[in-house]
Length: 241
Image: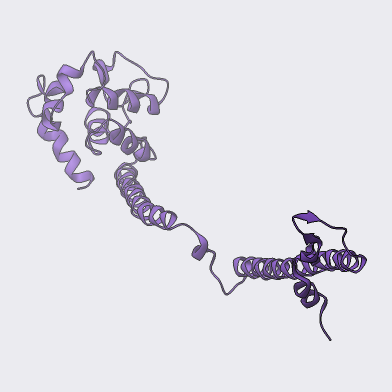
């Protein structure tokens, strides 16, 4: 059986409503025969059906392609939450670089904290073995020493030389600071003040306490007691390396 579309193609121009060749005579348009008009109308109607059928097939192909693409999304979602697929696979490579860079920094901080803790323990052990009141202030001393860039043993050594580690402190001043004319509200305050001055961070005294540990000790009390510098240095060695 001949299809509708094939019949439309057979009738050619007449199927699409154009003037039939037999209506052209001597340059004048004659009245179109009734059978031609019938075929013309019939062809126009069925050509529309052919186009509709074509569009329907085209739309069906588009829907099929869309369905296939959408079907991939659940698979990706399952992959993100699947215990067999690591979420790191979907992370940018820069994030991995940040993690690699942060690891050494974290290790360095941890190592530094361990060193500070070890030094504080050595100071406290020295004070505790001699029943000195400054036992327990080792952490404060090493923290302030790091803050003002001085030897971590300098503060406890001066305290031992000046007041036997706080036993003879004058008004929470175990360092004999300002010849004991200055008193403090707590040992913590005196530790902070002395560390700031010995570190050269006090503009009023920086000219005396800038430079090496020996220079600091010389201006601290070495001008009065000639052996003062060597005595404090010996105490520093006994506290730790």
